[in-house]
Structures are given as structure tokens and as C-alpha cells.
Length: 459
Ligand code: ARG
Image 1 (cartoon, protein in one colour):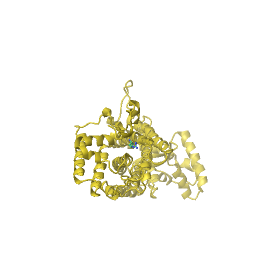
Image 2: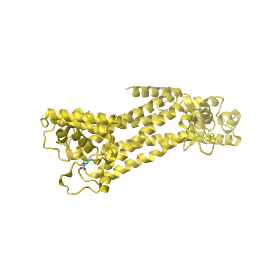
Image 3: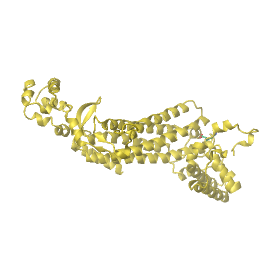
Image 4: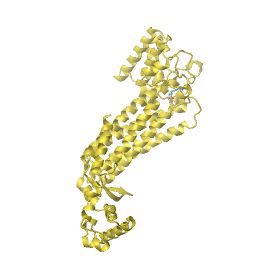
């Protein structure tokens, strides 16, 4: 069944139909399509464009289609001959309620209809993704609260740099994912204007009440330019960009977990329920989930670049190119939702080897900066202190020991400024605890930040 057979004298070539159809993927938003149509007919009746009887017949028909689709009594078959979900719903409606069904499309085009459906669909998905990000933030907070005194090395260039705590490291990701969350909220706010009533491109001649449909559908108001309304896919590009950033953050985190889970590091152990084995090597327990999440980042970026490229040459207003927005957006949404859920599951079951982390923080000269700062405290210029500690590190490397293990005599041979209190000054605890400015790993600073995060999530 076609919505536009009238001016044609020939059947559509089968390959053309196959190439052109979108039913195979836009059936994903049948719910939103029906929801939008119900709002549309309510408005048509209110404005005296449709009789109350027709309105009731249409709504009854649409609701029966919805419940039959939901409980499986009605299925959307790819060889039904329908072009897209809009014609499927309208055709099925007319089969069910007759004449009234043919009045549904009064004052509407598929161009504003698809713009509406896609907005309704992505708005629901944004809410779900935001919820998944929030779950992840909650889990990070649990780990942070339990580990404000779990020492570990902080790295630059993947070389041990200065001691931090596990809470501090997790806090960095908390920041990233809370920015992701606020990006999703921004997008939702900016996109939440209703395109319905824009018609094909130039509005309609019917006295539609666009404010009314907008409010029925939970929008903040109608869009203000009918051409832009049917041609705008900015919100999808913004969403794909936000999803790409989430995927990038997850991927960085996964990369660290993969490294931490190696035999060489042993900082963490991924739970058996989130690991996989090898078909040949009996000893193996692989971090496949972390690797897959890292790997899937590529297809999310791909979706963003695809849509940007698709949109760049499209003249106003609607062009069929825009149908390409769907599969890639759906795929990116489903991919990121899956990654978020699995990632949260993986870290909530993962065990952290505190002893290994702490030992690692102790044996990589992570307190060298603090040794230099100690000298500065005794009046030595920083640049000289840097040189002195460099010589001490060299001595330690030769002897295969840590700065903490040098005797006071050895210290004083390189600089007489050193006294007995150096050992306390460069202990791991002091190194971390002296970092008390907001944002630093010291316990008091960290606890203050955790308090802020808790409030943020409670809002
Ligand atoms: N399937 C189409 C899409 O996704 C629906 C809009 C069709 N409009 C049209 N003028 N052909 O964009």
C-alpha cells in the first residue's frame, strides 16, 4: 500500500522499493508514531477540522494497533509492501476503522511526522542513557567512598609520577561522566520543541493549534520555522557527539582496566562472570568485555561522521538523504546503552588489590617531588633541590632500593640539609595527605568533593 499512488501509471520497480523503504528500521518508533498521531487528531477535532466521531474512531483504531503490536497479535512484516512505519500505521488504521482512517493525515506531511517521531524517540532514549550514566556515577561514588586511603601510583606517560589514591583516580572518571550527563541534559533542553504542524515545509492552510500538540506531547513549545523543522537534524548530531564522548571515556577507562588486569600490574581482578577464556590456552582469563567496549567506540564515532557528512550538502528543506539518520543513530544509541550497562556491571563486580597498588606506588620514586619539596622547605632553591634528588634517585637505582630505604648518612653525603624528619616527609601517607587543596587526592579534600558529588546525584 502506497500513500502516493495517484499520479503514477506504473508499479514501483522491486529494487527501487527495497532501496527506498525504511519500514525495516523505522518500525522501531511505531509507538512514537502512534502517540504523535493521537495528539494530532485530538488537535484537529479541537480546531473543528475533524468531527468528534472521526477523532474517536481514529484514536480507538490507533490504540488497538498499538496494543496488538505490543502483544504480538500484529506484526510488521517487511514484505507487507508498506514503505515506512507511517504508511503502515495509516494503512492498518484504514483497514480497521474505514473512512475515518483516511482523514488522519489532514494537515500533516510525512516530513513533519518523521521529524516528530525521531524527536520523540531520541528524547526517550536520552532519558534512558542519562539514567545509565547516573547508575555508573553512583557506582563510581561507592568505589570512591571506600578508597579514600587506598594508595596507588598516579601516572604520566604511563610512567609512575606521584602517589594518589584510588578514590582520586575514580574521581577523574566521575568528572568525565558527569560532564557527559550534563551534555545529555543540554541536548534534551535544546531539542525539546515540536515540529508537528510544519507540514511538508511551508506549514499548512488549516487552523492548526501547534501550541496544543506541543504541550500534549511534552514539548516546551512549537518550533518557529517550518522549513527548519523538517530539515533539522542538529539534535541528532549533538547526540551522536555526546555518545561519541561517552564512548571515548568508557574506552579510556577500559584501556586502564585492561592494563591493571594484566599479570604485570595485577591492580584489579575482573570477576569471572565478566571474563572469558581461551579455546587453546587453559590458563587464560581475558578482559573481553573491556576490549569490546573499547572496540565499539569506532562505530559510534562512525555514526557521527556519517551523519555530519550526509547533512553537509542537503539544500532546504526535506530531502530523502535524511532517512539515513535512522539506522546509524539507532545503532549508536543501542551500542552506547549496552556498553554503559556492561561497564557498570564489570566495575561493580571487579576487585581492587589494594596491597599491590600501594606496593607499586612505593617502588617507583613517586615521592621524589616531595623529597625536593622537603629541601625547598629547608631553604634550598627548587632547581637545586631537583638536582639533588635526581642524584639520590640515581644512587637508589644503582642499589635497587627506594628513597625511603637510604640511610640518613647517604642522604647527607649528597646534601647536608637532610635531617631525620625526611623519612616522615616522604612517606606515602604524607605525600598524599599534604595535597589538601580542592581537587587534590588528600583525604580531607577528597571527602569534601565526595560530599559535593553526593548532593549532585541526589538532585
Ligand atoms: N522514511 C522517511 C524518512 O525517514 C519519511 C519521510 C518521507 N518523506 C518524503 N517526503 N518522502 O525520512
